[in-house]
Length: 91
Image (cartoon, rainbow, N blue to C red; front, side, top):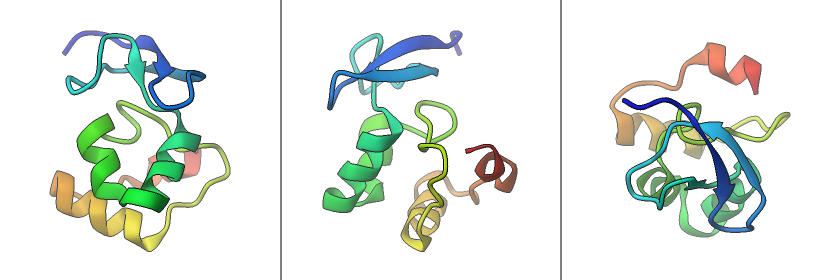
């Protein structure tokens, strides 16, 4: 896996941080955490994971946001593992 790169948000055009590139996005584009939550409210977390990748790897949840139970269920279904609790404490 290549190193991390700085991304612009494909949704709002803002800063999406430094993360690993998700192959479903053009180079140096990803999603910021705020837009990921916004998209999830409309289309569900499964859609966010399929389009933008794994949280904590390809994009970050916004600081102070505690994921909903729907987030955990979708994460476990998509990635066949539970979301690391250590990562939640850092967000």
